Image (cartoon, one colour):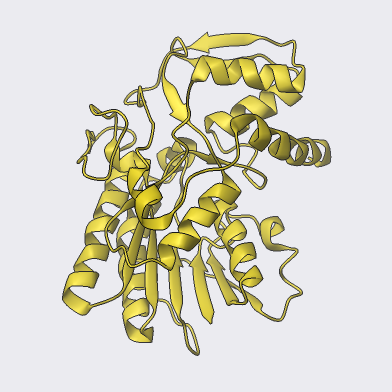
Length: 312
């Protein structure tokens, strides 16, 4: 079995590459390295069953030989990235999705799209289930990412309906773990980096907004089960344990013994006030639910950040 993982040098893509090699697949990782990092896959480079291709999936894709699976994970995924790369974000969600779906069609491959909880926007329904259509500002600062993913979902379903491509869609909620970029801009790397440096943690707003944090190995397990299921419609994969940002800040300071405290800044425009997945569908169809608590996941993540910060 042979799988193409776009965004394969990124945080999630590299962990997926690990899993598929463990499962006996040959892995082709494709990345233009705009936000990916070759260090994430350096341990895989010597393996004969691994191949890396530097390429932008918004351009035409050529892959020699058979492909059994295409996983489309290429995209800037943090606000700091898609605010700096708005057009590239829209292109990878539209042209990149079109190109990878076309490749899956040509190769007779099963296709899995990495979508996101951001399709729900700043939700009016809590927790968010897959039948909620969302509350998205299409011209707001987050619109380029939100709408790129919503379009990608529509394109994926169109290929399933019109061309009989076997498609799967995962809606990913906040995920963290080793190999996140230090300057990612999202709350987990921000807080951990500040805490390790002994700096005050920057909380936006009053910290009452909530997030749900999924450790990367739990996410990968959910994705693998979804790929091998028969479910063609979107499935939430995330951790339903909900924390306020202020609670999370206190936990990070406690676990790192950071005496820097907390400072408060204005809440960014369109920042979601609540984010928590309803995972009833994943439990029912995939027999999946997260197994790693936030404390456990942070304990496995902190050494990576300490190592990277000391090296940089």
